[in-house]
Length: 115
Image: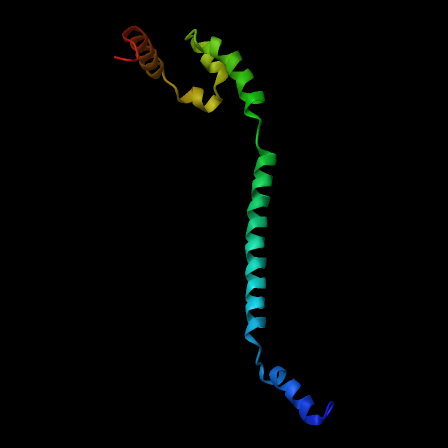
């Protein structure tokens, strides 16, 4: 008989005792797993977008600097190096370091890099 008390009790039994059909458990697990994976993907995508927005265009910054500085440095004049180095680096360089690098440069140029 529809609408009877016994039918009403049978419909409440799974809710009262916490019995959930297996299909519903699988759907919940898949739902939470999907949300977790989506969250991880969105997190790493956000990091990638953030880092790319903060990056420098190397061709616009470094190439003009290199084109300007390389002819000055290739003269091996100490003033050119001091003008292009930071103050801390200049204070740490002694004359012996300069002579060693100059000797190595001249020796490598005269001997050749392939020998």
